[in-house]
Length: 327
Ligand code: SF4
Image (cartoon, rainbow, N blue to C red; front, side, top):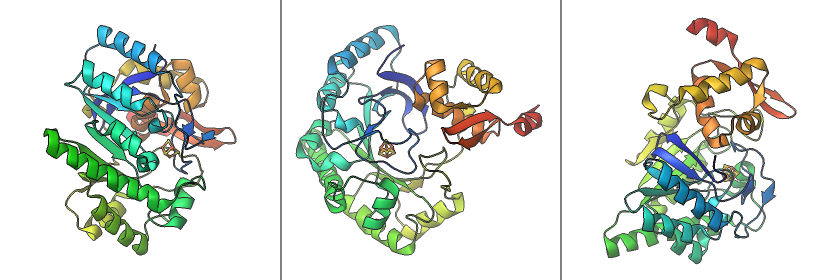
């Protein structure tokens, strides 16, 4: 079991993705209401070596020796990966040893206003910044940022990074993708005014694609509702931009190559004894929370499990109705 690597996790967008976690839970520059990892415990904009570069490289060497190649190496996990100031050198290490494998960075994009960070990750094959708000009010309500983040500076950082990607593409001919992820939360960022502002900003960023997402796991705040499929389709139509798609959909286990029945059985076995939180499952089964989350997605979409909200967080329990129907 590795401390900083997890998976490969079946990902709808990245194939078999080996997660590389560059920060401990939960170091982040934002504290989004919908965060699946839970509340931010260390909110910071300070880059640091939160997880040792040496340890990560040792784990990667071990992984290379003992496992088949994944489709993608993905910087993601327990917080904001670009807060680790060694991200550039770990990316260079991956490109040196496994040049044929794509490297992806899942980021909230807040630190892209730093020229040093833009330079550090410009050689990633796919960067997926999120941007959930283009007005100050929605930004405050959804992402609950520290005061030091200025929304315009944040957005300009994403714009500047996309420009840098395209400049480098021209120089070396290697394609660099930016998939901009927008998380739609009804009542927070789906008014006509917000959508109009979003369109303006998207055109300025000029990403490869825009991917609309919505809640399919419990967030840090209770009572959030997810956007319906027809709501998301309405937004795609309203914007009328060719490169916008919807990524939120109930996952289908048959389409997930690396879906492991033993992990699913272990989860079901545990929660059949008593309701468990995501953290309980992760700690007991020895799998990263992002990996457990993928299985909970499937089990929940198939109505095999259900969630209950308690003071200590969100608990999962067997949904007897769903199981009876499946029997
Ligand atoms: S969703 Fe991402 S950016 Fe937002 S709090 Fe969670 S880890 Fe941080």
